[in-house]
Length: 490
Image (cartoon, rainbow, N blue to C red; front, side, top):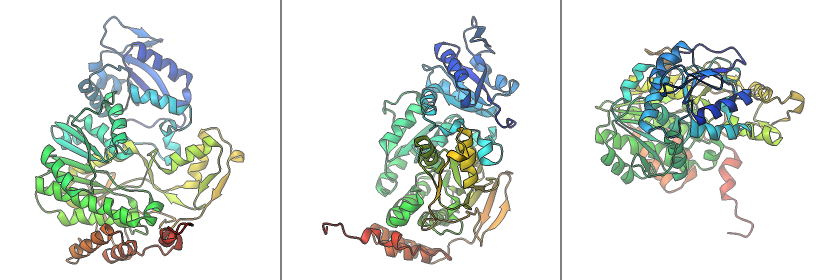
């Protein structure tokens, strides 16, 4: 595991490819130290290349792992646009095994463009925002879970799904199938992973997880041995307004996938959950907790199932930091719900690395909880974020909007009735709770029927019946907004 850099210290970067693309990239990085990357050398298979841009060529590409360790490399940038996908996967695997993160030229060039607009969050000093050092946690042993196996990632075009796809691809799966209902998401994902986006691969699957027949068709066709289920609706305020849609995706979609996995003999099924499922106060948290219960209920057969619960991911699409970045860039007031609100944060790379570790421990429907460190005050994060963008407090207009229906002032990782126990991994805990009782199937059936018929109030009532302690929001805004007629009477 790479030792943390001191605050403000540039990350040591190794550029694979000393050709025109690599040397151009080095010049760009030197002009933009705010990106946080310091090139220290190249790798290139041309034995006649000894130096480029004043940096040594430290060896051939086959020496990546050893050079990364010897040079304490934090980031490996693959700057050979024409490199075959198989070779890219090999280099990525070697880099990750050496404890370095990996970036690829096509997506990194796009990142350089985004950096000019202050919208790429990866260039910020993550340790300042997290209140701790970022930890790259993927161990070589984790590859055994996916190496040589057919792997399916749902929601593959989202932030978590895309990072899962990237890391899984580095561990030598027999096949990696990436499923999403949004073709634009798949287009962007293929561009990131392969440097082109022809959308001509049978590894890209368009499907809606709500469609049980289509999901069974997919499982019959690809016979996945490992499934990472990251597809979900996740925006809390919107789901308070549209609880039926939350149930259709987060509960019904999960049920369709779990059923198909168990029936087709999938070896492992991992549900990506959220800290909002612990003592839920929102429709989002309630539907994800019911999804965890579904996984628990179907455990006990040959398919090993588990859920992995964690909090906010820094820099994910639609996250608070993405919104904050846009507000600061545009000179708009920064909106924060409450001066004392706190949240748990980790980077997407950390979260996915730990998901892969948890997958190796999955057995009987466990709910694994990632160690996310201490909660971070949002107001402190805003000020640190702005400081890194050289925006002083006098220029920062912060406005408090109040907690929205279903939101907590402080999130928790474990429910009040859950027992926290250690696992074999120091950064992964297990939340032990009573398995769903005999009434669960009937109540679940009623919940799904209410969602299918778009009966919002019945959905809220059934969720409360399924989850002891959950009380639906009584906000008139959340409950009644859709009942208000249009001005013209329609």
